Image 1 (cartoon, helix red, strand yellow):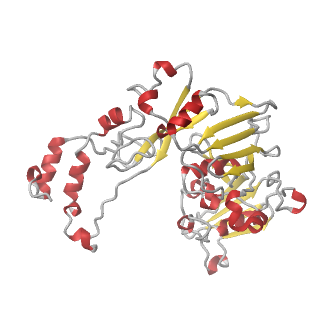
Image 2 (image 1 turned 135 degrees about the vertical axis):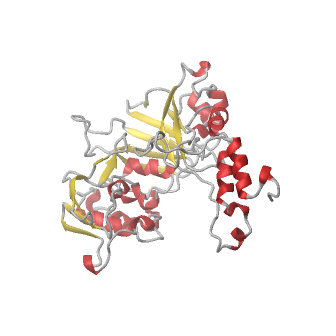
Image 3 (image 1 turned 180 degrees about the vertical axis):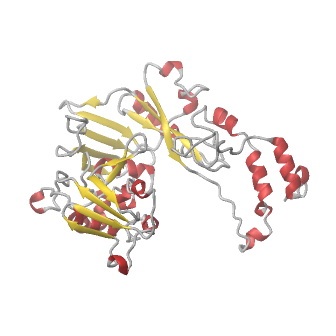
Length: 395
């Protein structure tokens, strides 16, 4: 296993990356004194339908437009969102959510008179059931524990009234509330899905802090402040920004020059710029950029892996030496994660030397879990055990 930055593909399994953000200070004000945040998304955005938001780029956009029952705070703890409270049955199989009564969909032509209506529990029933349609969603596997048997009237989700939404599970699942924080489980109005059909992905209608304004695919996406947004910071209605604009320049050198010239407020991820030019060997800003940029580093959870087939019922595995566990362990002991992160990625990230769970997750504990490290003597011992002393006879 090795930990590194997003998008690196090494021989390794399980990583916690550092999300690297380089900004030029405060968001800019336009000629109308509106505060606009501008960032570039090199990979582009394929759609803004939460049901199909299965990559980071889409999720970032979807997150501005939609809300779900619950959400994560910056410590990865589940907190209320549209659901103001909930309770779980003693057997862990029934979740009952009570919704806020001040959440409205964005104004849109799909509604009568163009005015967004109040969100009800029925909207969640429709939105969740929509996830079963494989043509629309890639979240079907997340619904495998939903009870749609005779016991629940073949309904995994019900609304007993406008403000009460109920979910039934086949088996208790302690992580279920965390699963519901995923953007797949955002609420959408059925009117928008019906009105726009397959084009809903580029005509999003949600409840989030920003509402859709304009999308020129491959060029620019513009989101405007939702003046009716329901969340407050205590006394001030959110969001603080008046707008968010997203550009889609694919060339990182061009994007970096635009950041220098003040067009963008942020570039996100180490692959968005030349880290050898911008960062020193410790992963900090080079002296010439200290007065130009603010560098933010934070835990970014992502798992990449190289899978090894071990099922001996598969023909290509029957003759493969990799079916031998000792050999697979030798490979894991055979490279230096610490040096790879230090020299290949300028210490942006953490070497995964404490098992599969990455640093940043609550269950990470390097004192209890001892993972793999670089150990040539162990490699030699395991190669002998596997039947390939000093690597001899290894095809």
